[in-house]
Length: 416
Image (cartoon, rainbow, N blue to C red; front, side):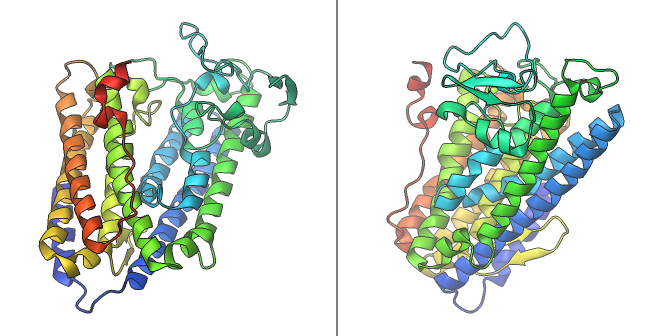
């Protein structure tokens, strides 16, 4: 299905080719418009998630829990496509950790399997905010009797420890699904709906668990409103992108290269494959990682082609980085587009197999044949990054710095 729609899109894009020359200013305005549209879609679906959470908490049933999970999964689709605007943009880099930080020490938030024990590197790995109305941080007592968005903001990444994720998509994911204890076998988290049912409570503290889930979804909506404002007229993200053409082009290519190589190919894919560790999959509680990887890849392609299909089916499109490269070297421009098409096919193959019943964490298992699919996608991401680097040199964006990853650049260090 995707292969047909992808090549239809590619043919349309290449045939358009924007007959009149595109200026860097035109390209960057379209870049910022796509960013704003992506965050607007993310906000709209986060609001739908919040409504589904309200319904779950008002009447905890298997049906209302399933609806909240479905809303979370839908909300990930536009958000993952916005990740191509990270890395080069300071305002996005500063903000992003509040909404998409991972992996997280689940015991900071709620009860966890007793056989996991505490994380020696993180004294808060079993703090269990939900069970404890008072917490001690750096020798000081924190009143957690009322779980609010403000409390969660204050507890997020306590003591500068990145694994102390108290907010964002993955905190909500953990609360909806619970821990995935399947290892590299098939199966997502299995939190019972009675964990939110104060009349038939399991897991203890059902009222506080409900309050945490509500506070986290409210906060996600607030944070995404900030993101929309950041890319609207006068917002810092938009201003940073369009104020100086050279800086904006560097910013855009930095986002593409760093997401493609160090982040997606490296930290999100190769590391888990090297370690055969399902804890390294991004959406580990819901087993949705195959979709998150796919839409990250699509976000890269969106930015390069200057085209984004919104949740409602409308299209934002205009002058693009593809046009900028094509004006100097049409062959390279098309080779890079072809690389991205092949990457999307490889990510689509993972998605197809996962949708058929073989979850991404199974593919990470030692000797599992699905590992070859993951490696194939990694190889294509690396290949497209090499042509991104060539494009960067061609257009003179010499200050682009593409994020690396030990799992790609020095794999032996991963095991040290």
